[in-house]
Length: 204
Image 1 (cartoon, helix red, strand yellow):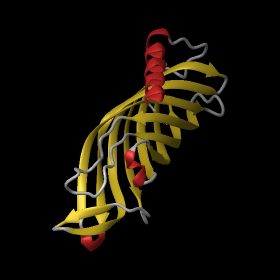
Image 2 (cartoon, helix red, strand yellow):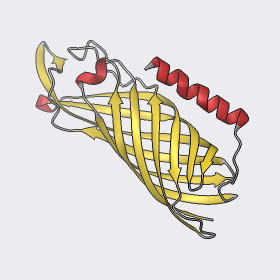
Image 3 (tube, rainbow, N blue to C red):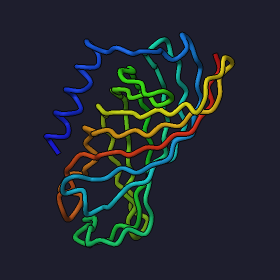
Image 4 (spheres, rainbow, N blue to C red):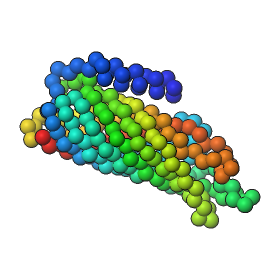
């Protein structure tokens, strides 16, 4: 996973300094989209499993640059694991996790194939996750989120007034949502790879 992180950062740096595009997306565009996807754990946090995401984003695009604010709900029910909370020497099995994320996303277009655009992305923000156990025990964890990645954006047709678009984004999320070992039976350290699909509408 470290190799993936290094590759994403290298691509983003290359994109920032050497980006060239044959045809730019229209000079200015406002976009609103609905996002759906999954966060895949890459360490000891695999014991919790994949965490699903549903969110909204608003974006302002200027030439090859995009500036967005994204909100997401993350969660997973019916967790089948041996993960327990430690409470007064009693063990209570985890039932579900839920939380939220908010990020500022900067994207830069660097390759265009007709209606398909490839972009580098860097997201900075905040996340929290609540771990819900039996007997109504809840442990929470908050973390800063730093997420480099790539976006594939599809604009089906040219439209001077705007139109629908779709995009797929992969990011490596440097984020610490692990509970302290004095609260839980196992270590759950690790970062997440997020795969997010968005469909939205843009206007010039």
